[in-house]
Image (cartoon, rainbow, N blue to C red):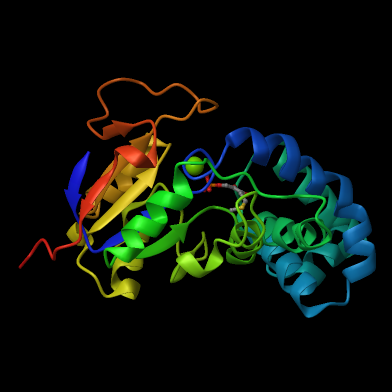
Length: 247
Ligand SMILES: CSCCC(=O)C(=O)COP(=O)(O)O
Ligand SMILES: [Mg+2]
């Protein structure tokens, strides 16, 4: 695949990194530590903010109003709701913020070391050396993204990225989210290449005017044919000419 672009926007799970690592290591860690985290960190402003977001995602005016209406302890409500969202594999913003906070101890203690496909770091180095601006867009919270790329099997990859976006910018399957990212980036959408394993995300990015590439990784779910996105098995196949496409 050969494209002209100024920026590369990267999905994480299924694109830079194995779906199996997220589902077999990160999600079980968050599930195991949820109750203890809520008990120990309940009064932390970051925990409170994530819990308020969980309440908001559940359609509640606030955590306190939810607890009053249900006559339940707010912590029990958050634990139950977060567990329900994890069971349903929902990528809700509040759950993702909570998971990011819980993963901090796992990455910082060394219990979790993020998986990144071996073709990724050399390609990112190459693209940056050629002048590209690299950014992440994941359902994982910005804090989770920073922990993840700060603690990979290939070392600290965080300095390679100049920006991070999560679902606080908008859902990954809506064109408006990609328009908002391009506006924040101050780049024309056509000068951004978005790489993901999910065709619905790529459809939304294409609708916003971005260029797209579909990653076919060993652990990814099969894709339906007819999506119209260029398929690649490795970042090594992506050749980027960093010229402004409008110049
Ligand atoms: C970025 S670390 C956490 C991964 C995660 O929680 C997740 O939901 C991954 O979603 P993605 O949008 O990167 O496929
Ligand atoms: Mg993905």
